[in-house]
Figure 1 (spheres, each protein chain N blue to C red):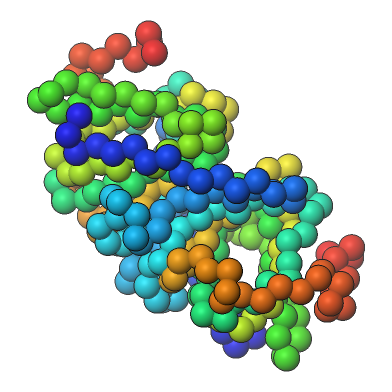
Figure 2: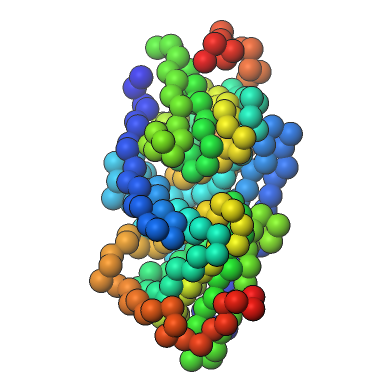
Length: 136
Length: 136
């Protein structure tokens, strides 16, 4: 799907505790820093749908496992991210996004290119698009 | 201690999973984005001492609890951060830093103003400064 990039991230193993890369300013997909925040999603819960009109998202799952489902006129795209499939998901504006918590504790970081502004995003109810969450 | 700032961060409660602020580009303490990475520290382990000569650290503990100990010619400063004491710890260059994992899983985010470069930091063994880790 155009506008979506998955970038494998480096994990540096250390006997006292590992280190996990998230983003460098020289990385592909970086288009400025506006705000960093964490979202958590409880097991089995789904947040969405939300479409940002200006914000580019850079999403990294640092705890648990999260299924992301993206939707535009080309159809659906889905990916499950965790420390076992440790990649950064870059999403440009104008793509509908929803995500589901799979593990007990699920934490994702969003490194956004602009600060949060409720006026630059649209929201729709979860049943607005015909995605079968139960089968995944 | 000069050069250290603690900034309380907003937690937005949500029935499907809470949201935790980390940093906005308009926040005090923000001095450019170079790299974001996660460090983990196992329970009872201590990483340190490390002194950055150019990097300003912005540290946020998103899982577990971490004790940070900072040292310069003024003496020691220590603080324990977690989601219960949810603050961002900003540390300017030229301060010695060590940190200890307190909980089972401990994850901290560093929002650094420059990209990682091993040549801009110094390391000393943990017993180089007389801090009593056992009592804390």
